[in-house]
Each structure stands twice: as structure tokens, then as C-alpha cells.
Image (tube, rainbow, N blue to C red; front, side, top):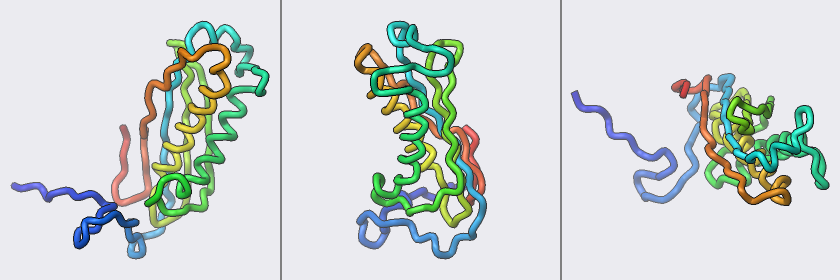
Amino acid sequence: MNQPVKTFSHINPDTNYPTMVDVSDKQVTKRIAKAQSTVVLGPEIMQHLQGNDIQTKKGPVFQTAIIAGTMAAKKTADLIPLCHPLALESCKIEITINEEQEVVIGCTAAVTSKTGVEMEALTGASVAALTIYDMCKAFSHNILIKETKLLEKTGGKSDFNG
């Protein structure tokens, strides 16, 4: 049995030009996406960890990253050209240190809409990681933003649990 050929959703098949996906016929549902970024700061920077944050001349690193990630998630459509503007109902960013001494940033975004919030969750996690890099680079440039990935999404045509 032949599988249907998948096409890129942001390409108009008639013109082959980029286009915003038409969601006008989709159902409004509660949509949630979770994304994660991992940052390796290394021992030189991690030695500055006190309690649940790193203090720098620019301020508390993780608290600032949470605010920056939230702001970025709200502006995703301004950053990624074909994303639909969404009125986020929730954006939660959590920062933890895992057993490998890596900084793990989780971003959960939610909306009741006709389109999903994967890009908002990914943007929030990414910008939080970039903010941590920016605030810690005075200690060392040996910082690695190891990965950013979608962990799960629910509420649309198909769910994903990676």
C-alpha cells in the first residue's frame, strides 16, 4: 500500500512560493506544547551557582532567562515569518540542573486556538538558552547550547510525544 506523499505545509502547491497555512477550517482546541533546551556551562561557570541561580553583574541569570524566554514566546510570529500570531494563555519556563551538571530549560506554552504552539515553546526555550549564554559569557565562552527539541504537543490534528 502506497503512503501519501507529504508536502511542506508552508509552500503553495500552485505557485511553489512560501505561504502562511490557512487554518480557517480547523477546529479551535486547547493546544499545549513542551520544548527543551540544554546548555552546558562547564565547571568554570557552574562554580558560581548559588542556590538556584548564578549571580552576575547583569543580574540573576536564570530569572532573567525565564523572563526573556517568556517574552520571546509571545513574539514568535514577529520572529518566524510564517507563524500565526497567537494570544498565549500560558507560558511557563523552568530551569533545572541535571545530573551531568547541564542547565535544562523547559518551556510549556498553551493556547486555545486553530493552530499549535510548538514554535512558541521552542522559541521560549531557545531564547532562554541564548540569554544564559549572554549573561555567562563574561566568565567563559566555552558554553555549549547542546540541543533544543520539541518534547510533546497535544490538541491538534495529531499529537506528538518525543
